[in-house]
Image 1: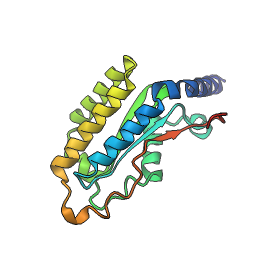
Image 2: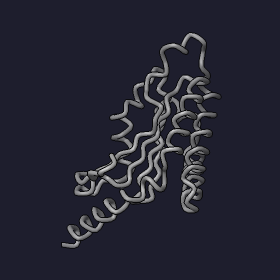
Image 3: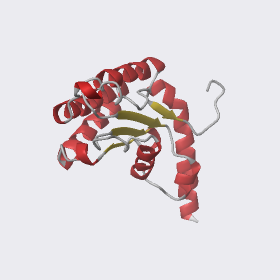
Image 4: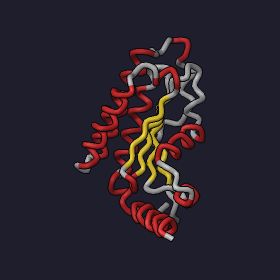
Length: 180
């Protein structure tokens, strides 16, 4: 019985977080992130995506899935893994669980140690705790972009065909909203 209570409590927490999504990430922040991603991808051959969810879908809550499992699923769903040089990155936020995941494709992942990736996540958590989602995301994006620029600089022959994924952050909502 406690498992069901836990899942229901988690569901309520995840749905409650939906109302804070727009306050945490206003349209101006999302637009700035989109422009920064586009600018970044002019200097490297990787693909960077940002995905933010207030809460998990019911099916993930029911099976007690983690933020990491959802981030891996989104990594595939958003085709971040489908880069020519295996150098895509997904910055994933799950607001209800205060979870941050960075999923880096094989080649990019090898350019930083596990401690360096964890430091990046810890720095984001510090910014978010202070309510500075904009600062945390911009800083993380800049650091991932620098890593891509250092290890996967853009060659002029790749300019026309390599910016194939959308630059806009993905905001996943799991409740119907009037202003959607």
